[in-house]
Image 1: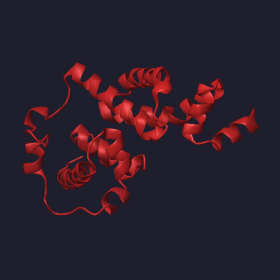
Image 2: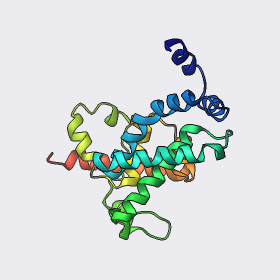
Image 3: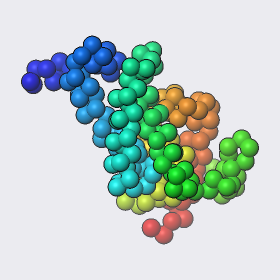
Length: 196
């Protein structure tokens, strides 16, 4: 059993999918175990609640299982599953009508309120990396709009590249880079002004 687990770690996600589609159920189990915690964490941060995140995560893996035969092996499985997670989280928030600041979006999708509140001075990436007040940072991150928070979490917590974030969120690369910069600016402003 241990040898099979070690062997499965040598396979790419796409190889595991191919093995599952040929009848190897353990390949799917391994893939689910690999992504269960990252997807759950992503969803919990996105929707702001652990109780809801459990149900949404279960729904995501059900969608993955149902659509695995349609998976395009030319794409990254990681970005595909995180795209499903993002869409499921957005659907959940829409049902709850809990997308904050959405009324402030202009026709380009930019949030006019956060644009005017943001400090235009650049924020070095070290601010996020060096934040020794983890709880303050976590609480402050919750104050960011979901689009900003998601980009920062994917970049710094899940170690996604900007291209992977763009593919996951199904948005242009330049939009993600711009949103990343604005999120860092807003985070800096909140961290310096926050009484937390």
